[in-house]
Length: 453
Ligand code: FAD
Image (cartoon, rainbow, N blue to C red; front, side, top):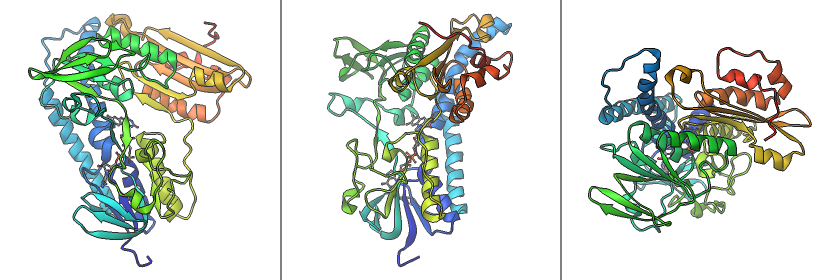
């Protein structure tokens, strides 16, 4: 230590900040971590974890229906939103405490207040205290974007509030076409809420493989979700105890709630980064190099605030790599290529690697293998749902460039496919692998016919 209060001051105790703080402390650094809301950050408190718990909750309605085909007679079942929220909150409290314990066990000091940057080595706490550090790590995450130009925007909720609604509306309009929008559409619809998804693009889930996007949209519609593409919300007005949502095409909906899932913006507002001369990207994210260092040598940034790949495991990896590099004496760069990912839509998506469109842009010959089938469970449940699997292969080298799945357990499959694709597996490796029978995943190793369209 050289005249500073701390070796490292982390702003934000979310996925990236907590990992960085813990690892740096383990290397012997004197670390403080400031958090203005709840330790654990978006993922634990109001993102991945509560979202997945809600997804589980919302699937039971179909499970009860499907069970009948297997001989079960379900007597009258009912759902209580308040107990779901209460049980979810208990689990989030448990995780929040575990995060606090882990930080403290690592020897990091937790400061439960807002911190801003005063200069390249000084942070200012909300209480007015100033603290200095050799390094500052900005790990403040992102926040839901709300289109404030829109009349009535203040009547809408975002994912933050969706986790704490006092009661379920009978109808909801969700604005957005990204993964958070489609996940919440599945959640609300599964819980019996009439759900309308309003999306600006020509299809939901921009950036995903087109076949997967179309397949998911079709399956969501079968579940009764109304998807209105190429539509924009023009106005929101209060109506009774709900809202009235007007679209630019003249359509109007009455609903109990309207929710914006219209993207997320890096948390840089009021953070004082300009006091230190930290440069931002045109998207208002902290601009960093491959070692997560900002334009100011003593200030680093990891996670969503850098708007690279906005996922929890990425923020964690970036936080860890930062600590290894700055305090562990080994330079570690995070590889942002071939990140497997899941969308907990209903049905689920699991994907890794290039979409067909991306592959055709970068490769001379692209082979497509795909299959759509009825999952075995639905032969008895009678449910009209299909699963889609698609492999994108370099026709010259036979290397598998992308795998895209929409159907039950697709997220679990994506984790393993992520290893395989990263290792550079060829289609012939898939073919040579014995099937696991009877599973849905076996279709991945039994795809023989090239798709000719
Ligand atoms: P965060 O986890 O957001 O942590 C930032 C922390 O900084 C917050 O706790 C915040 O309160 C605090 N903070 C901000 N400013 C200050 C300040 N000035 N002083 C003190 N503290 C401050 N990712 C996945 O991988 N899988 C998923 O299934 C998934 N689902 C999601 C679902 C939803 C609804 C949302 C919103 C996100 C989801 N994500 C998912 C994304 C994931 O949550 C983020 O990528 C991840 O949390 C980013 O971690 P982070 O450390 O960058 O920021």
